[in-house]
Length: 165
Image 1 (tube, rainbow, N blue to C red):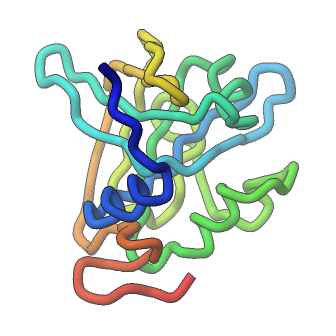
Image 2 (cartoon, rainbow, N blue to C red):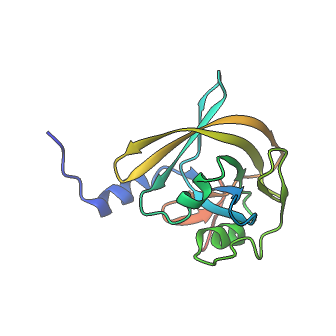
């Protein structure tokens, strides 16, 4: 028996769990241009082999383009990077026009000033209801100091203070 949970109530309750804000990006093979999207479901999946996962809505128009690259860079945004989040989650055809970035060791866009970055290669995709669950193998990574940007109860912020959207 499948429980019927009202979607608005589901979102409200699940919003109590803070999530990290991660820019997933690649150089598109067909245009050689940087492309990216924001995910709030990025997580460590396995230590051996080193795997990460994230989920993307089936309705996403960015994921089909990123998928073609295979090699991605996940930039864990810092608390001061709200504008980067807005730029990469928008519909602008040049999402990186106002985002400072450089190539990661794997050749994907790495957001400058990100709290951490993870180069990875897509290895699996699984159906997850109205989302696809992407599993990727880590090929390189590094992190620094600072506070990550989080999404909590409908707001972007840090651990200490929300930032108005």
